[in-house]
Amino acid sequence: MEELVLRVRLLSGDTLDVVYEDGAAGSEREVIDHVVATLSQDSGALRCRHGDRLLVLYARGVAAVEVAPRGAVL
Image 1: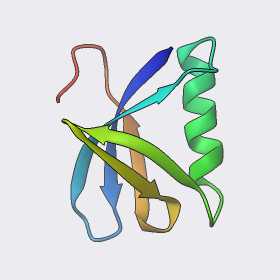
Image 2: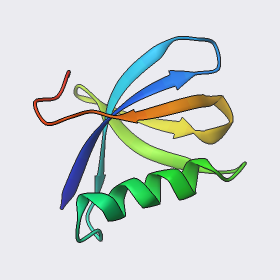
Image 3: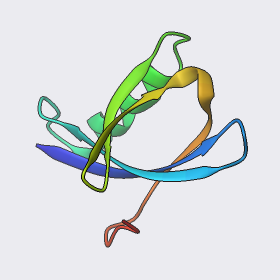
Image 4: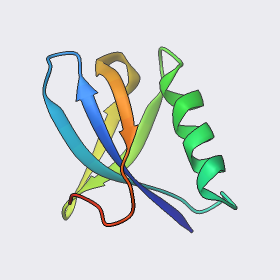
């Protein structure tokens, strides 16, 4: 299971650090491609974690996504 930490900039200007996991992905690159493809759609949504909380990140509210290096900021 590949896991990525994403720093998300919302349209409001706020930033949020979340963890996204993709059990079907074989590599980190595939996960990044899936995230970009999902958020490029108007109806795109990702299930993510923020600490112990589950949240749904909707593409409509996302302005930018940054992939965090190893040694995450969470």
